[in-house]
Image (cartoon, rainbow, N blue to C red; front, side):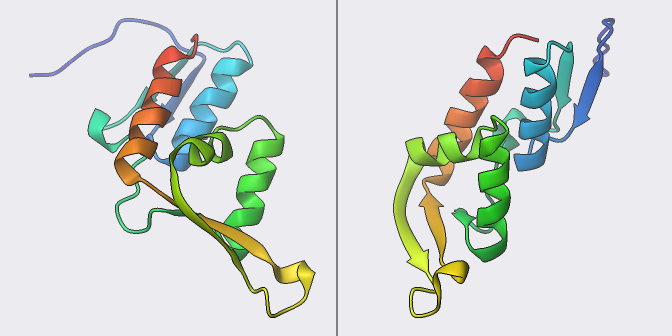
Length: 119
């Protein structure tokens, strides 16, 4: 069976991983009619391999997304199990926070944010 949606959208985001969720929320918050397509609602903001956000590279990216009004940092604050500062034996320029999420709770909370957003 094929589902067909006869509506017009300004933005269609393919995929509901971290990037898809952030892209969809950003465009909707700019007032654009937005749709996010995913194979399964159970895979929204899924963390199949690594339930961590942060670290040397990803931590900086998450801070930039947060500064632009993104949800990843807000959601991880709601759902974290533990956090750890990495590279503390080195200089402060390379210190980075890594936070481990409750995978199911992170997915559930991000899905709620998406569902509540006006499109």
